[in-house]
Length: 462
Image 1 (cartoon, rainbow, N blue to C red):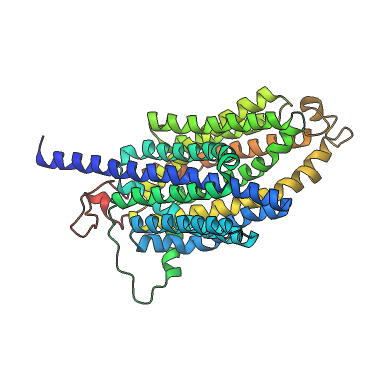
Image 2 (tube, rainbow, N blue to C red):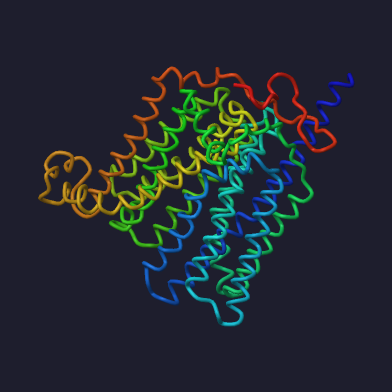
């Protein structure tokens, strides 16, 4: 083996080692975050009996991240990404320890919880784009799909394991113990980051008079000038909006003909689909053309979403939910891989922050609209004497829950139609023909700066 080939192999293995170290830390801290969010929600409900005060926890989680994300992306691109992630983990650990101390001295109040989850949300607004933007510095272009599949698998494990563990731990070690476990999980993430290395991409010195807002806008200008990326962003936003509506409406849909235990079973099997989809993406690497993974699986996800509304059948809803959730990791992994390979490393923090802003704004809008759409539009249409009872009602039924079923059919067909429409746009269909902006792991200089490996390593590549 030549010296150059050996050096490239060593860099590749070192990158994956660092990625796996960071991934493990994020997996542990992700489970901890889900665990504490679930446990704090239970505490608020049991202490106040107020659904509104419980819902305010999710508002406190969403709003700070939404407000700070545009600037967070620019700062992530300015700063050392590993140190950003390390600082975020330590801040979250300190927040959980503070809440635990307040609880231990019987001083924990509602505003402490809202402030605590708000601080954790702010930390995650910096950590998430830093994590996503670090991946292409640690994996080759060929490894991106598998690596992002592993990221989605970790997210699925956190989503499934967090609430399950919380239910056990709250009854066995109380909220105080759960908060300490969560703090320990964040510290585990911090230790993993302390032992990992993330190359710093070369960054041009900012022009005199450039503001942070102008730097934040550079990410948007980059995306806007590339129709393929702009199209992907549109698909991402609309999918999140439609999924936000469906995620609220699924509970009344199932409860219209089944009991809460069956609802839990349906959601649990959906989570299993999420985990299986992530594992399949990791093992196979996904479609050769990543745009097929984004649009093809969005089409299948839309059809699975539509199937939820065809009949009040638990078997149908469980199977459709499993397929829907199995598609989501493939969509996310392929989408992230496209952005990581087509956006210069020095701009990725900003571009991933744009996606986060869109997600954080689209899904809450869906949450807000779900109730009025179901109660005031779709349910009356398929009441026993509703406007559509004699037409669509003869196919999917009438009465309680059937209007929500029609809403699911509508949402699913809209998602599928969006995927087909995006495929008809040449810039989106050919997005992979954009020049690659990153070569993956590269040698680092003595100061930790990334030394470009060939033409693709230049941070300013178009």
